[in-house]
Length: 131
Length: 131
DNA sequence: GCGTATTTCAACCGAATGGTTGACGAGCCG
DNA sequence: CGGCTCGTCAACCATTCGGTTGAAATACGC
Image: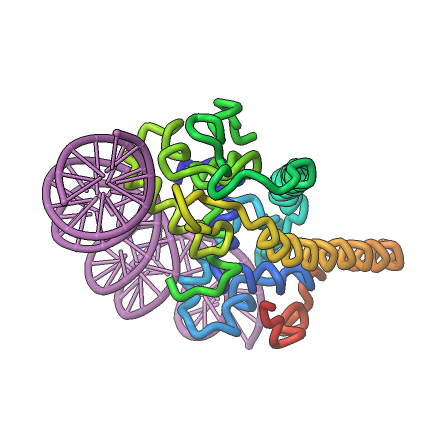
């Protein structure tokens, strides 16, 4: 699990139980025991889930004095939102362009002109480099 | 992998390679071969990745006539965006309320008043029910 | 129709997940 | 101090995941 944080965040939220925990944590901090209550799994399992959320940076444990409560860190959501928005916009932009192309193309081009013959399609920017 | 779509989408994007593929697909449709090019893994592995993206509904394969190109379905992004936004707003709302509480609380409360004695904290709405 | 390129199917492998049970450490209360 | 509750650590188990190789399909050019 040496993945980048974005991967960890997505992975953490890929589990319905974990997603539900996050949902509940938006309402209030909670102890591990409280978090475990609704699910019929062992407390240890929940502890592991919390650990996963923590590794993803979605959650912190102030651990100040008494019962260390689990606390949501909402900022991390922005990581995902940024990624998603970026590519969604790019996709929409592309569809717009594609519409233009289709509009500019009267009607001809018999059967299969899409994607061009070879090596024209993608492969464009060789390094879409994540970040 | 009988998980709900939201889980599948998150899981699909938890892999950097898959995320990169999605990023490239926002630029143009591509064949499996084209998609495979930049990575030094077998084409079969990429085929599997595409399958995962497809199961998540992030991608379709028109498969009409010629080379079946892989096509991005951007609408699915909304699924995630909705989930994220919903809980982010809830979290922000909560912080706002919490600030109010802190503001209303002069200074007293000696050492450890947080989380209340018992069963007061979370457990509130018993069913945060996902969707 | 044949050959070739592209893609998928199938079996297998190592590592990671999500879960279990059992034991141990840390804080409270009486 | 003794006990209780809470949480984590540890070992173990079944399943899934991402990758490999090899073989079969599928679709195109000629």
